[in-house]
Image (cartoon, rainbow, N blue to C red; front, side):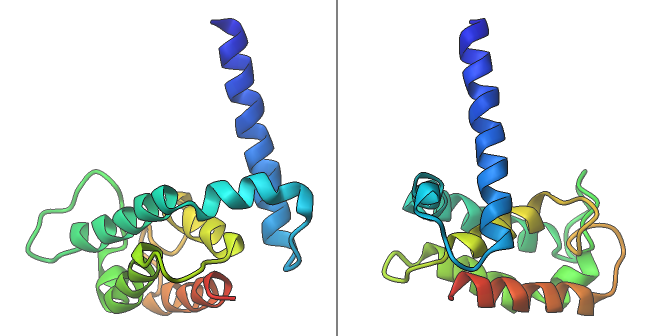
Length: 137
């Protein structure tokens, strides 16, 4: 049991390191091919696309706010850009770049990022433009 836990922790650490390298460089090292394959797999893309769609749904003004402190106003103003990213992820015929996938993961997970709290809707729009550029590069 302890061995499995250590293996899991080691893999999580390797993923974090690989993600940082993918974010820092536009040229992908061949030794990161394993992580690129994980990030760009159809299953992972569908999971992220669903997560983006759920964020848009959770920001609907007809619904009560949920437990996550989403910036509902910013999300509503950038609804089409978020759904466009989700659509790109769902489209199995379109290649996506691992760097863009990592950026989407960070967007969804970073509680200090533009999806959360009460920031300027423009901040989210600018971030989505960067993500779109990285995803389709």
